Length: 499
Image (cartoon, rainbow, N blue to C red):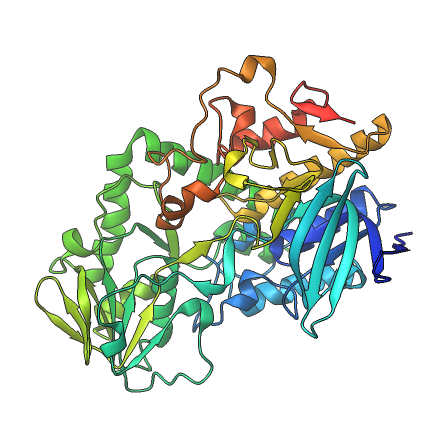
């Protein structure tokens, strides 16, 4: 039975104690809570969520057409079959998460409207103390033996918008997809969407029919994959009335296998893959469209995330003439639109800055370890989950080249195994430290820019922990290796220090 222990603080404020405190009720937090209830059912825990509902990304983003850019057979949890189309809307994902909460009675563990301001570790007490403020302004104090960071890695309150000259002169409206205004009316308007990633590619076809015209303005092209929003083997197995749990497992294995093969081809034969990806687009847009300028990136495939465009809706919108692409750089904003460096003026009534997000590694929480401010960027990561000098804490950071949730399941298994191991050892504290043989190891940035280099990582690399050149001291982004290595990780290795 999960029972919170209540104590009294020095200010007579009730303090609740839990074995584990999970930060965030998004896709990571809900998945982690599920695994904790199933693998360690006697563990007391609470999930603190700043918003008034679960969902994380899927309630933060409310722009037209918002959908996944990963298939839901692998973005969904391994324990809960996905029965809808592989690329799903935000509402479909939220409905799926709601079923997970209801079916497993997770709602009683979640405290909504609790924004965490600080988290401090005491080696004397072997405890985390967490201060949260509710939307009513009430301060709540919690203590926990273990902290499970599931809050994601970007700032939900505001997206990233560069500062362009003349933005104050523009007489129209500027909106960011992450803070989409409820009162915005696109009907009959000339719209410019700045950006070329998954958000822009989703937004364009969703609003093209409503706008007078919509332009995707990009500084440089992005890779896309196109295909039906369906998986043939899943359709066939359903026609044969195969159990959905079987279908889910078979389709997950098929997708994981194919993604592994595709990723390896991108590295081994980048030019061949590049031609294939661009040929798909040329086939839709026709021989006269300037694919070389607008859809031929300068980098090799998978150095940045490749978005899937279901049913080619983005390119069909361009082919119809309702949408178009301009590849140029912004000189400045003008009264009636955007002045480009080429000299052209893009007229606009509304400008949407689909320019990414602000990385926020620790959820804007002030961390202290024994009274000293935690400089997260000075730590070294153990497999992208734990960090040198940070006791009793695990952080969930998913995959770029595979579905985020694949790592949610993987990390949850690791955490439950670690907590069980601590109980067996009667240890109240665990942290990771570099072993003697690691002291001469090169200490490198979180990720190799030659391997993966999206703008939000490059802008904020200094905020992220460091990595070493050994597999256990880095987040490899290689699910296909990690799914074998992490379950086998030796919890009595010298990298783990118990008290």
